[in-house]
Amino acid sequence: MTARAHRIALLTDAAIELIADGGMRALTHRAVDARAELPPGTTSAYLRTRQALIEAVVQRLVERDRVDLAAYDLPTEPPAAQPGPRLDGDALDQLAAGVAEVLDRWLGVGRSRALARYACLLEAVHRPELRGILQHGTGIRVQSRDLLTRAGATDPDRQGDRFVAYVDGLLFDRLVGTGALTAPTPGTPASRADLADAVRTLLRALTGR
Image (cartoon, rainbow, N blue to C red; front, side):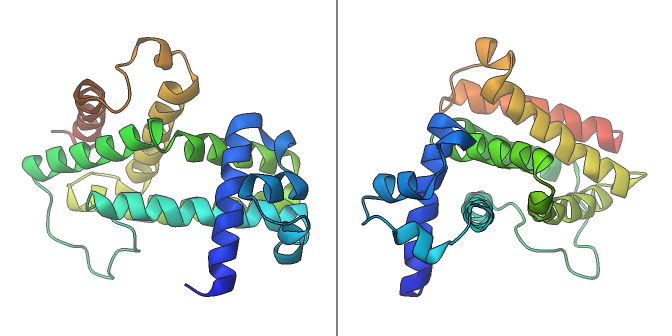
């Protein structure tokens, strides 16, 4: 990582925590400088506009999410031109367990990133110039379509997109919705088991197993 890349990572990590704590209103160049414990003007020197800052935050979220996905052997790169091996019931159960591990992490130690991600997406609703950040979500949909193809889904493109939407809804519900009131505490075996059961049920429904 270059010195510039390292500095931008430091700034965007600070910005993520700011957004998680105070929403998008808390995100200013001066506030990022203070949170990162860097001299005033540092953030502006690297990320001149608010749009540039938000786009850099989203890119950093994508980078850190990929690290989490890779840690649990979940796909992070576009699928090969030819589909991989078929996924049987045991493989789907393993996939569900891996997805549950990542979701549990995002509900616990990665909670700030999950909150910042949703905040940035909501910001894009009101600021058309930021709509480009939605493109970062296309990769996971392509990967999900590939997984559903290999699992024998009858309409893998549609079902792959739905899988992403359902899992995202599960995360949102556990993070800020009513599900947070009754779900097991994140970071516990009970939480991971509950999430795995939900994802496993979803995969079986989508693949007719």
